[in-house]
Amino acid sequence: MEKGIVVAGTGGQGIVAAGEFLAEALFRAGYEVINSRSYGSEARGGSCRSEVLFSDSDIYDLQLDEADILVILSIPAFRRYQNRAKKDALILVDAVVLEKLGESEVRTDVKLVPVKARETAIGLGNPIVANMVLLGALARHSDILSLEDMQGVVREMMRVSMQEININALESGYSQA
Image (cartoon, rainbow, N blue to C red):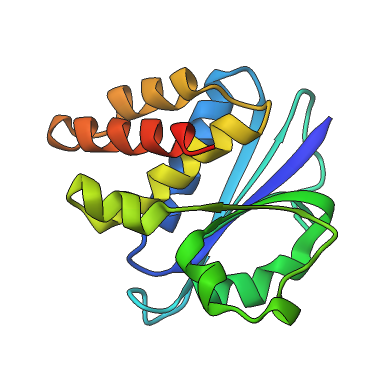
């Protein structure tokens, strides 16, 4: 089994960090993992994505053409990457993004899950943790990771001052489903 995840949004939304935490959690769960990232030269405010390939065996193809899972935090990212999702793929998207898109812009052959990521993050006190809200929802809607896997990575990799809010964000995303 080999699967690919694309986390996409705008620079400054924690896209690269989300990909790194996700890749580490998958690695600790026993998968072979490759993580790559791409962001525009303008960094904050530009296009940004993180790709995570994972498998229960060796990975030989380093290119992710079609994703099994998309995690989307911005309108431009949704428009740009939704067509990279396989048929029946899981797409977790910030609910604010879906509210601003036209019905004709949204695919019907995927499992689309709106998550109140930004709204929840603001309620927690920091909009930057919207990425973790979506990763919590990913733990809930997929069978690849548990909430505990993600919490463990946050506890071990994140500076102490940011652990509580990020764990709360993961839990909030997990409980929205």
